[in-house]
Image 1: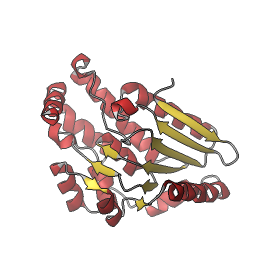
Image 2: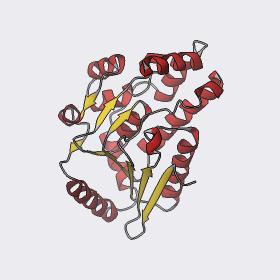
Image 3: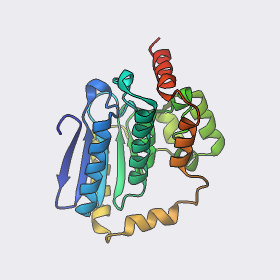
Length: 245
């Protein structure tokens, strides 16, 4: 299963570091990578990991949905892939472990939503977020972005598909901006110690207490936005081709 997600386990503190490892594809989420991440979350839960860190190899954190095999997909298979990604995001958001995103480079679409699903985000000066899903009618990312900022900001960012750079992200409270790799690793070590010292279940309890009740259901919103009108694969193809020009 190498070349998709590399897992580094630190048994002494039960921390699992997951490295997105497809730099030639901007670490985009193909079906195999999504399922590998589901498997790694299963292992983290089995081992009662206190912290899960998501990071990436290469210039991009995650380029979102991998569209390289689009011509072989159908509406049904594309919808299934997007639902599996949404379920992955919900698992990260509800993980019993503290989840941390280490963002160095662009996080786009589902990759940006993966960042926002984590509890703590550490970013370098090259980090950015972008939500281009509105180009093919997907309601994806708005709920998490709105919960962190405001409904009006989230709607504008998702509709315009504009880029949130590292400074804007820090200003909006989306992440902690760190200057050097040493500073990033020092913060990881601090979080590791804190997560390891807390009793099992503490992180989930703190998250539940800190999270306001949210209207709607992100999974239902995603499925409804994509399945109501036929032609999902063709809309995604047109969106891809517009971006390539």
